[in-house]
Length: 346
Image (tube, rainbow, N blue to C red; front, top):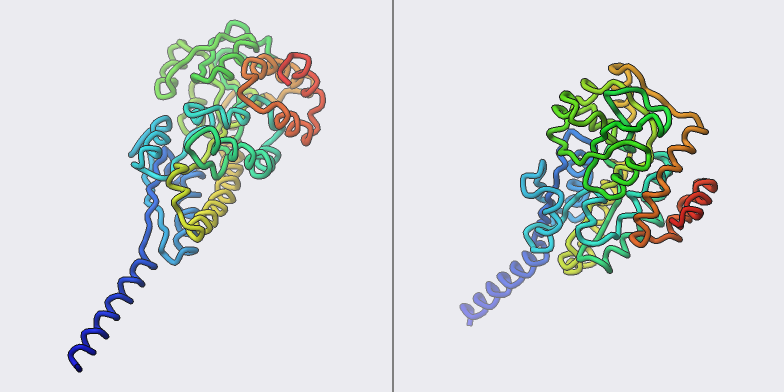
C-alpha cells in the first residue's frame, strides 16, 4: 500500500511537472530582414522588439532574428513567412506590393508634408486602416509602417535642380516602382531603372546622372562623392513595414499576442525616433561634403508637387482615395488636393 501511495504521489508529481513545462514552454518567432544592428530599424529590433517581448512574456515568447538578408531578400521574406519558414519579416512598402496594393498609399509622392506628419498619420488611423486592409487582401498581419531614411531627395552630378524643368534630359536612376518612374518622367528627366549596388559606378561613368533616394542611404553608400548637387524636394516617403504571417499570428494565444504587441510598440517608438535622428545627422554631414544643397521656395515646391499628379493618377485604383484625401486635409494641403482632383487622381 505504501509502495502504491508512493507511486501515485510520484506520478502526480511528474504530471504536475509536465503541465508546468507545457505552460512555461518557450515559443520562438523567427525573424528575417535586410535590417542590421547599427542602423535605426535594426537597433529597434535588437534593443526594442526582442528584449521587450521576452521580458513581457517572462521568456515564454522570444525572437530569433536573422539580419542582413541572411535568410531572404525583401521580396522573398514574405513568401518564406507564408511557407512557415519564418514568422516575422520586413520590406519596403513598395515591395509589399508583391502580395497586394494594401500599402501603396504610403508610396504616393507628397502624401506627407514632413517627417512629423508622416509618423503621426502612419502610426495612427491610416496605419491601422491599411493593416486591416492588408489582413483581408494578403496572408500578412502588418504591425507597423515606418520610414527608413525619411524622404527621398534628388542628388545629381550634372547641374543644380531648382525646379522640375531643370531636370530636362538628365538620366535619373529609378527603382522598379511605376509611381517613381512616372514621377521622374513627369518632372522632365529620363528615368533609367538601374541596380542600386552598381549605382556608384554608373554615376562615375555617366550611365546615369542622378538618383532619387533617401539621404542617409546616399551618404552611407558614398553617392555624394560622385554627385555634388542636391535638391530638398522630398515627396516620396521611404516607407517600410514589419509584418507576420497571418496564419501563424492567428495561432498565437491572447497572451502571446499581447506580449508581441508590447514588443512592437517599443519597436515603433525606437524605429521612428532613431530614423529621425539618423536623417538629421547624415543630412548635415552630407551638406558639408557637396557643392550645393538647395531648398526650393514655396512657389517652386508647387511646381514639384504638380509633377506628382500624374503619378497619383496612374496609381488610381490601388489606393483608397478618401483616406488619401483625409490625410492631405489633416495637413492643410488643400491646394494639392485641388490639383489632384483636377487631374483625376482623387
